[in-house]
Image (cartoon, rainbow, N blue to C red; front, side, top):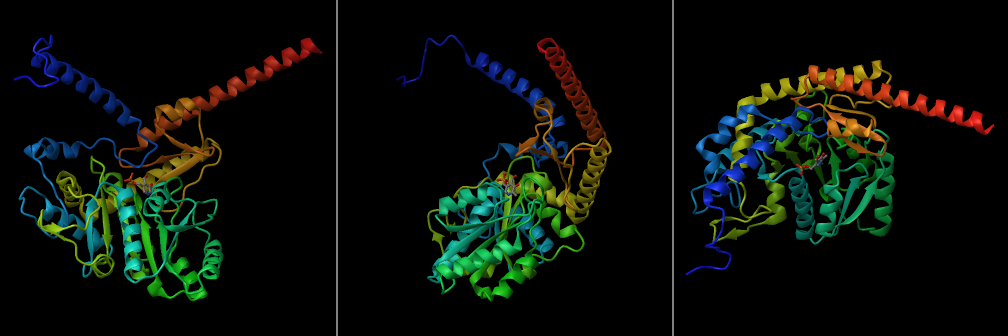
Length: 421
Ligand SMILES: Cc1ncc(COP(=O)(O)O)c(C=O)c1O
């Protein structure tokens, strides 16, 4: 019997196809390793040799599936839920909610944000109350996308030039919402713990002040923190207000950003009590677990990856890496200021340096994110001072080149003008 697609006359045998695939992969790997050395614009650690041991250890070839709730083991034994719970416990401890937490390993910050917003919808839905979702204009694009997916009623709050939410604008918006719904709906407020472009942090205490001034009942407010990049830096910075103590109800952190997992993943954490009120019981007999996560099957290797980096670095290692990244970001800021580069800024105690959008060649070489005339470097663990020096040298050269071209154009215009005159 032969099936459709089988070709007995095929001129390539399996060995040839294998060789072609291997050669293509080798080329791809070489190219990616080259890109990793100039990966400056996005908040990831592009190459992590520490993880190679984990990657090639026989675990990478196993189908490890964390389907469903991290605390409920289904009938299948091939999962990494014990490791997942340890990783969650580590982050819950950092945020001081070890007595009352629930969470899971997500596919990334976007899914964590989606879950926080979904939980808010279900929480107020279970009480039969309407919900208004509030987010700032500097929020990551996953926030409005998720709001569309969940069909939430939304309000957008204007921001300061720094990217931080304007609290006076929040107050005005809440007054407007109250005019529309005098009964006052439930509010879900999205709190930026580090905006994507400038790293601005919204102050939960200022939001609380606005809520008290306007007398919005606290039981009608959930606050979701989008801490994709800064989630594992924020708790180490002295003076930062404790999020959960100040009324935050959930948080989303990306695992492949500051934590440094090689594959995209994330952590969603909330108070177990709130989660229970929002969702109740979702037992699924087929898999023998609770259907509490957005996707059913979940990649168990990601949880292992996350557990591994957190275990290996510990609080001490994360704090030390955070300090180095912030100091290196300050170093880059100083270098840019010394060359009088335009529009340089850096929000305090984080690792994003913003400056005027450079030449297309620089954007391409350093894979920079650019938006509205500005670009940024996210100073991650792989951006050492010598790489910063190399970046600044290239930037200086591109500035000199631009000035040279400007002078040439001016000269040509002057000569042309002379002829015409
Ligand atoms: C503030 C913020 N939130 C959410 C995300 C989305 O995270 P992920 O790419 O892990 O889905 C990002 C990504 O850059 C981000 O900067």
